[in-house]
Image 1 (cartoon, each protein chain N blue to C red):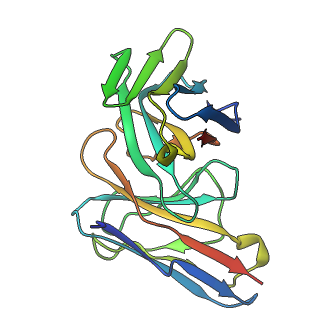
Image 2: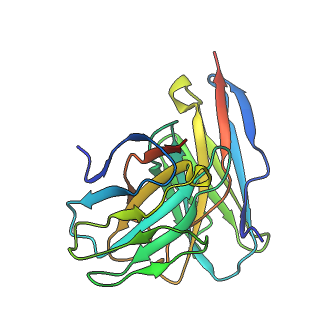
Length: 113
Length: 112
């Protein structure tokens, strides 16, 4: 049973517009959420994170929103740039994360010129 | 500058061979992890370690084994490779507190 779900396998957005990537989770013990960006044949690189005590975290063009009651988070990228084309993984941690991250299947973001 | 190193980046090997995937980190992190990822799928945790001489199996059952004799080194071994082991293997480490995970570049393994 998937605990972290990314229901959109791919998303195409025009350059300069806003990209919104969504993530849902089922485990109420998750207390920290992360977004990773991954290029083919590379390891994931950390993008942005949010603690469950917050509902928003912003870093430059990237903003993550958390809706705990809906068990939903989203990553907003604005404005979208060609270099943003990659696979984005949502990940979650419970209780300090010593036992590793739980990942979603990823969303392939394609930025159209 | 990479703080976590995986070798080899790519490996094509015949069925039945023994292989070891190397992972080293220079950050002094106690916790290290191995993830397996098939194309279009999520990363699955197959092994993790809290520190030297500590190894645990992850959520996804794997025929591979790991060892943690030194803090900085967390190699993964397959005694007898099979085509079903074809996948990307990603090593990661983490420091104190939540988050702070750093991934290596991965090893793309193909067993023919």
